[in-house]
Length: 364
Image (cartoon, rainbow, N blue to C red):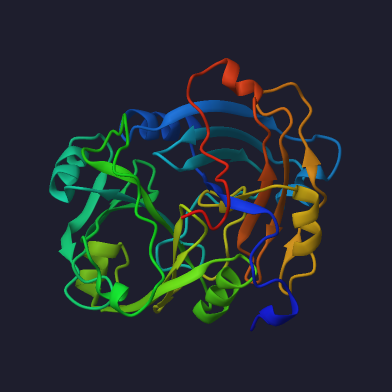
């Protein structure tokens, strides 16, 4: 399916300021919070839930999950400019097997560090962490000079360490630039951690995904690259036990976020996206000035489905006053627009604060 971005906005989501958070559904919320806070240096801001509706189809309309699903939620500040949302769902028909890197719906979270060897040594001492293979050096292509390695959280979430070279070859061919995380992450668990370098998503059609993220979502293509790997290398370094080809496009998405979109050619790819309520469910959220206006504009973007209606939280809880609505992109990718006013109630219980909003989407 191709996306005609000429008939919709090509300047991004109206009123967008920045990517507000990235979210993952985990099997055990307490375990995940303990890991991100204790091992990786996140700060817990608030918890919510259970979020459920025992009488209507609200959960299905607004979140695209089973009507009787129930969720517990935690929001963490994760580095200088990132917020991380974690979900634990209980739902009829829940799939508890997360997608692999090579499956459609595969995903990862990459952390930039100043000394990848020290970071790996630290993580080897953390209970339940699996370092995948050895640190790799990129020797050619647009990102030559980078060093990287994947690792898994105790429940299997895919993460990455990346030490970015001072200068990269792609910079000679384009004026586009990756966001480089702030050099100071106070309280980081990993030695030399600078912040989230990128979030990664495996998609079924790379051209379609690039068109959507650089058109209606307002991103800027920075570079593309390709990896061909035999079964030994793919299993050791990527967690995929067979030969593969991976095509990747890296996109700057607003002022402080890089998104890595990948398409895998592999023998037994799982092509069904996880639902929000499945382990491995995930979404990406944008902070906007006006949720109703953004939702109205998005409803006219080809391939986009706004779920339900914009919601206002008025329960007196930690995010009383939050306006939000979910939407889906053309291959089913889950996204969200939201607006949280200053002075949220959660601020009364912690000195930690959410990141954002940025002054402007183009504030670089």
